[in-house]
Each structure stands twice: as C-alpha cells, then as structure tokens.
Image (cartoon, rainbow, N blue to C red; front, top):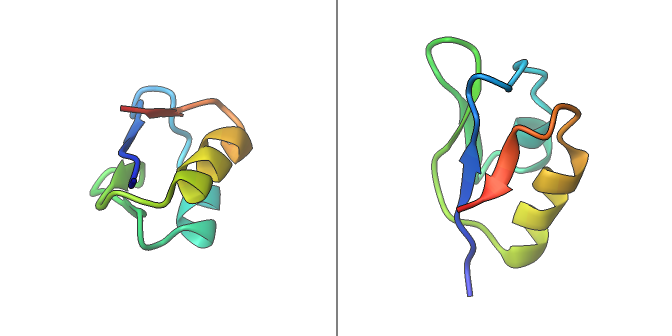
Length: 60
C-alpha cells in the first residue's frame, strides 16, 4: 500500500536529498523547499524520513 509523506516546510533546509533519491515523490517548491508531489512505496517514504538531515519529513 502506498504511503503519503508530508514535509514540514518550516524545518526543511532545501538540501535536496529526498528529491535526489525519490524525485517521483518529492520536488522543490517555489521557495526552494521540498514538497510532496505523489504517494510512494513504503520503503521509499521510510528511506526519505530516515535520511532527512533535519527530520522535516514524516508520514501523513
């Protein structure tokens, strides 16, 4: 079952790790912060959550 991620744009520093690893789920918004553009596989969402350096990504 696909998981939906969410990004805390206040915490996001725009490093791009999530986008580089999972561009099918995340993209940059107009402020240069990550935003969710699609649901993703459980493993991909969990990977993005685990690798965010400022813990800005969580599961919705």
